[in-house]
Amino acid sequence: MSDNFSVSKNTKKSNPFGVSAWLLTYNPTKWEWNHYDEAVSITKTGAGCYINWNCANQNAKIGDRVFIVKLGENSSPKGIFATGYIISGFFEDDNFDLSKSNRIKYVSILLTTILDYKTDKIITIDELNTIFPQQVWSPQGSGIAIKPEIVHPFMKLWNDRIFELSQPDSCMDTLPLAECKYSKEDFLKEVFLPESEYDKLRSLLLRKKNIILQGASGIGKTFSAKRLAYSIIGEKNDSHICMVQFHQSYSYEDFIIGYRPNENGGFELQSGVFYNFCEKCKENPDKPYFFIIDEINRGNLSKIFGELLMLIESDKRGEHHKINLVYDETEFYIPENLHIIGMMNTADRSLAMIDYALRRRFSFYTMKPAFDNADNNGFSAYTKTISCELYHAVIAKIRKLNEAIRKDSSLGKGFEIGHSYFSPENRSVIDNDWVRNAVEYEIIPLIEEYWFDDEQKAEEWKKILYQALGEDYDS
View 1 (cartoon, rainbow, N blue to C red):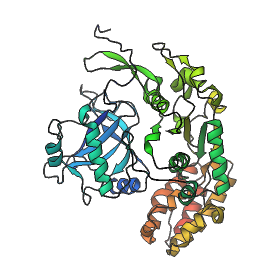
View 2 (view 1 turned 135 degrees about the vertical axis):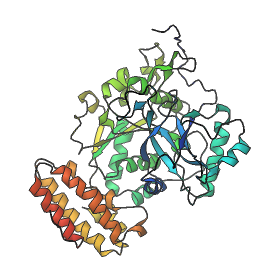
View 3 (view 1 turned 135 degrees about the horizontal axis):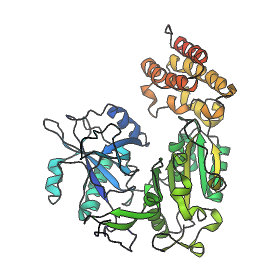
């Protein structure tokens, strides 16, 4: 054990400016971002894009803000074009060379805004060097800290640029946002859910304070979770929302509190993303806040929540239920204005069911594909203006496919095909090629996975779908 070991009793972030932000690099001459155009399109709909990124500085923590800077010789323009959050701890590439001592470290990030650097006006290196000369904007490595004293003015510059481009920035969580009203009616326009189901879902969340949205992939769980939060807040205000993604290595130390390396080579006690967000909620007790957990069943929930397992219950909230945390016996409680929304993919066979101790602390709401009951949930109105005949022919087959999936004893309702595969925000992109790509590269791989042990069934449905596309299929 090294003697260089220190403990800070202050579990708040040491940054006096209240924000930790990091600069990650992207050099297209060294790494080709294969799905870049798709990622840009995804964030323009208000959704997020998950990706693993090289980050050399291990002081970066879950919940910290990141900005992506484009660099490289003969790579124009150079500058900042994307932002998001760190959502995982550090890990190494599975394919790293064991003979190398300096192994590449990665973090998972949720990118919430990606500008198209080919067409959009990004914040260039020249601009940054002029406005903030004290910061290195062309670093040699990925993962340097943005100096605390310039984080706020820099984020204002970013926010102004996004506003100028009329693209919503969904993670300006440290700056006041322009008022953007969001109501129940707005929710029903964007999420394919009947009004009665919205009322039920809202009531569940406000009463229980903890809900899990479960369903197959492509149902729109993440999208719906944020819109539900907006509708209760009354505006699109992401300063009242925090999102993380659980995984097998996620720990109590990431989530609540734990020892982390410091700049002096020692260790200090630092608070995690959930602790920090709870403290933020306490500053404004009359307003609702929402903590959203993607892939909630991928983490060891009892291990992650620890002694706070009891405190997330709706009747155990507030200061009069405070307890001492195990690391430094700091008194802590979960505020009454915090609501937890988890998402769970019911089609993931590799995962065990959610911990029973947590199951009773959450209400579970099953989200269903919008293909059925389309007249009541808004999906018919969405598809009515789509003129592509092939699109409607394929949707008819997907309805039949879902019926077969529901009746299959090895699958069931939790494996149905979700409507998100066929509902891009920009309906004008839907043409014959778009439909063919959706079927061939998204739906058919799902079918092959679902019926991996029933080749005859898989071949039968692949043939049906290819025939719907007007193509011959030769197995």
